[in-house]
Length: 620
Ligand code: SF4
Image (cartoon, rainbow, N blue to C red; front, side, top):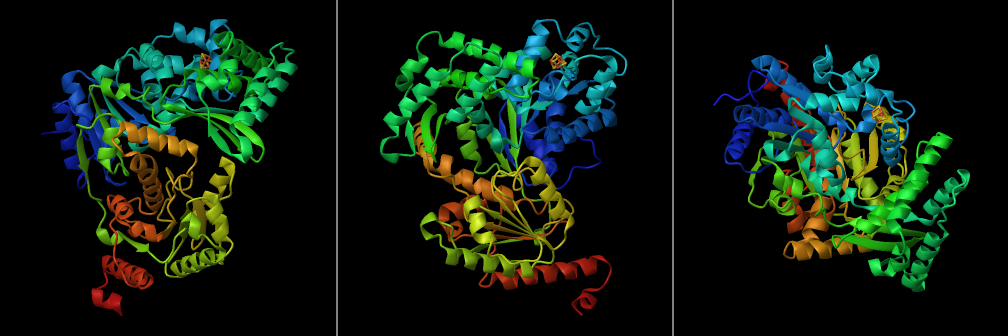
């Protein structure tokens, strides 16, 4: 079978993946792909899906959680189109906020942006929108701009004075492939508007979900919201600034009363039922939300503000109203700060989209255990395929250090000092930089102060993203340094440490979620829903996935090499070891520090041999 593939030849295992995906599509089955970084999942999935879609007259959606992942998909599709001289269109569509060229609106953040856009459009005050309405999708240069990605489309739109989002959506009507964000199809609040705008339907499409291990968490966030007393105070100040008559005192009063009733005797958190907030829900609740939305917008316009606390209150009230049995309402008091949370435990309301597609392809480097994902997505009868690393085995070696644990009951300054000592020993045996990932900032801070190394880069709690990026850049440029960061954060997931800038990774402890009420509610909900598997699905597996994600930062291509140490005795327990062994092969060693040195010596020998010296020369 000849598949559409932009390069001369698929890599090792890539060909098998293409054929497996194609086979699943022929059977109209969903497929889960677990394949390590570097195997070429994007090219394989798009190659198989396009080959099938063009034959059967289907569309292809390639969805990613982050905009940065669009580029490679665009390149893969463009490469196929060029190589095979095919005649089909493809479009790169990012969120409207990233494509807006109206500078009176595009600096507004989050919810405020969408309300502001809607308002200027309704009032006929966005000339770019009006221009886009009559803009011809066959206009000269548009196809080229679209096929070069959303940034080039933005430049094009500035030149023509048209709304980039509207024109891109118009162009997408005739496209066979759409590259977009998860929320375009997964978020039920956006889905139908988006599909109507681009004139496509899901039932006629193969949907590829990149980094699909994130899908449940991303969808949960669409239905989760929270409000604090401070947030209401800020909204009240904004209302005063625009001389609004809306009074939020009763909302504050209702939350305070609820807190005193539910959080008696110093309890930090408690569940809240809808009926507990009957007074809040009384009266013209929907009308209040509308009034607040209008007032929030008025505030943004009058004060040229980037965001509005009033809009946040409106969003919370809507989320509270819409909350169903898959949601927990929890009131908390942390250091005297009262907060009311609406936390989605499982995204029942988003998942029907998955059933609608012609077929789905879910892929990730941490898609294990696949049957858990298939179960949670409601697609238990899917095909599940796992592929080995395309890199030679001596590239990576992993150990479990059973001498330590960060288990809450066993944490002590002495334990922290001993862990720090071991980290320093590992650092000494690694010829280059070391990254150490911790389960929380508390553990990071506790251990970091004992780690005495010359060049240390430490992630801090509440670090702004600009500061985090700068920390990352400095660490990558500083060979032989040590990075200390937390798991589940921006330095441990979705980030590429280029040029093999990390030679060793230490995973300290297990990044288990704090056992708070939300977690307990999620475990109970999933227990009921998935036959007693709540603990695994909500607690253990997500923690191991975070650890494996962090451990995966070092080896990104066939030339990279690294050692990995999982430092917590619980990793040797059957259920944890089984979960990490799905993605990483663990080596047994009586003295792993010695084994690490041997690993590097061996790799140096291999390097010398590759450079043309004989094995004997290298040994000498
Ligand atoms: S219609 Fe387009 S250009 Fe106008 S505000 Fe909305 S996104 Fe921006």
